[in-house]
Image (cartoon, rainbow over all chains, first blue to last red; front, side, top):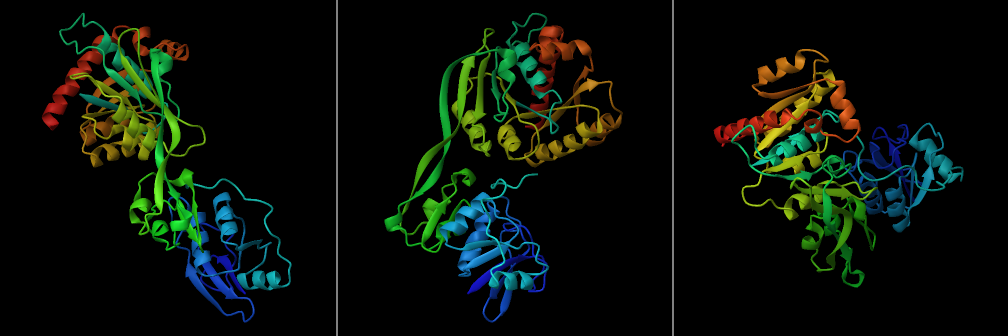
Length: 122
Length: 294
């Protein structure tokens, strides 16, 4: 099972970046072997629609689930359409810990979309 | 002649200037030979149009405007992803075999429809606002756009306002721009012959004027400055204008009577009729400067 975690540095031991669409990196983790690879978020600097672009990237990685701090309405809609599960990192100290807690079934799913999606607000 | 009125900072007096400028040209020309006749005023601040509150035109025509957004014909779509690749605004996403369109992010550029190798994308008009057109008692032709609440993109409404309401031959056009210096301002002032910047002698006024001047320079527009609320603040604004070679075309003093009139829906010209001549002389000066720049 492949899980993506949004992180601040390209590392499994990085802190979780609480932003989905504008997080720094995506760490793609094989939850069974804990093998991982990190990719910069191609949507981080998008002028608009970052959550959508990020969701598409996560879908392209063939991930089954994604762990972050929150998911905006557009990201929520796109990830739902792609059949990718969303999980809240719940204060986990690192991406590694977040995945361990996910495997233990300790992470919650968002109750709904957070905030207002769309364009970057100045 | 097309004169755009912009400012950078909001609340410096763009509408005060634009409406009084329009009224001064519509006046019959007594006190001067220069009488270009009633202009066309286009209120391009489509997120909060207010010039009509002062000029009170009778709106004769109202119509919807929109942007073309993609519609995907699912049976023909192969989910190849070309549409999402070419979309600069992330308004279309390909997620596995599904294509999702986010209409409120779409700028209506049409790239997706052109890029689709299967011809599976057609475009449908999505209304995002209305345009209104009318005439005032004094004969000023008037138009404005109003962006629907919740819609994020003012640019297409402004573009269509300028395209769809045209001046008569020889008629002066006044473009009342939105505040700021981003896309909607560029859309409003693009194609003007002169950029009239209304500012105030405060640090905020100066800061945003600098940005507005950069917009004007980038677009290659000749510019002039009106200092409103003259007498407050400090000398930095005047020094900046002098240093940049920006002509100060008018100073409007900080005065209670003007503010009171404005709050009651009266223009500067109605509070102080003597400004009619000053505005007409300013338009003559602007005409000379356009000729020199041209």
